[in-house]
Structures are given as structure tokens and as C-alpha cells.
Length: 220
Image (cartoon, rainbow, N blue to C red; front, side):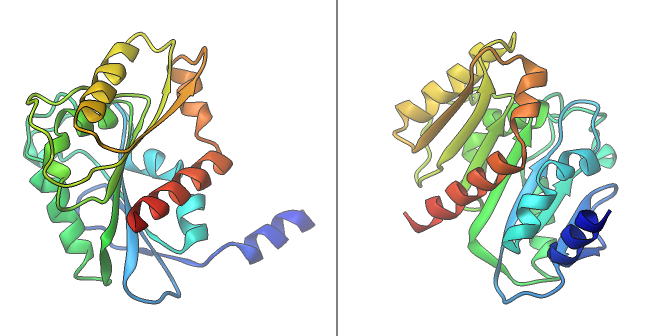
């Protein structure tokens, strides 16, 4: 119990602010210097933004960044899956812009991460993130874009995927697109990893390592 209280005292103070969208989650450091980096999270199929955001909460809070976990918008026709939604990526970008009206965001340190179906939709619409996000993270998913057109600007990508996921070939095809477009790619392979092991691979240490990589990618 004493160790728990020490951990709570040492944990960064987070202000849970009113999110810009229904069932979304927004966390802003209680004490901060502007402008702030932001990590935007997209959930998996039949999952909540709260659950998806919890994977990144501790690591993002430790760095003093903003966390925005988005719920696929039911009022825009999304049921429970990003990759089945035919909505526009501009909706995601609009939510980030709304957060920017609450707290100053660093436009060069905006990052998009997704799990499972959220990651697949991110890959499918990869070209749409250019100009908004400095780098993206594909976790346990991935679908190659509909168009072969390469991005005009850099879009570094970090893959955390398992080779025993039945849909692993789609992640490989997405990687091939990034490689073909000469983008910076980190291929963090969970050997023998199925979908459950892909999820478990994102522990606190690895989340910190990925955020460090995102921060480093901003300086390249």
C-alpha cells in the first residue's frame, strides 16, 4: 500500500478536460509549458476510446503530452469499427483542431496511433495524414492505401505487429508501400505473436520507447 501511494504521488498531474467529441477522452497535463505535443489514439473493433487510451495514458502523462483518444463517430455513420467506416479522415483532423483551441499544440509534434481496426483504417488512408501528423504508429493492424501515390512530405511509421496474426499480410503490404515511398520505417515484430500477443506487447516500457521514437522523428 505504501508503494502504491508513493507511485500516485510521483505520477504526473493530469487534468481530464471536456473532449471535443462524444465518448472521446482528452487528457491535458495540469502543469505545462506551451506548446504541447499530442498523441491521438484510434481504438480497435468493438472497443471504446477509453480502453484504447488506457494503453497510452501512463506513457503520455509521464512525458507531459496531451492525449486524445477518439471514438469512431456514430453520428457520422460509424458503428463500432474504424476500418468499416467510409467517413472522411478530416473528421479526425477537426477534433485535433478543436483541442488546439483549448490548449496550444505544437503543430510539428502531432502523432497518430491506432490499434487493430483503427490501425488498419489509418494505413488505408495514409496519404490523408500528411501535413497534420508528424509520424504514425500501426499496432496490430494495417491495410495498404487505396492509391499508390506517395506522400509529398515525410510520414515516419512505427509498426508493432505479430507474425501470427491471421491478417499479418496486410501489415506487410502496408510496410511495402511505406518502403516503396522511401519513408522511415520501424518494424517491431512480435515473433510468434497473434492478435492477443500484439496487444500485450504494448507494455509501459514499450510505450515509452515508442514515444521516444516519435519525439526523435520530429527532430529529423
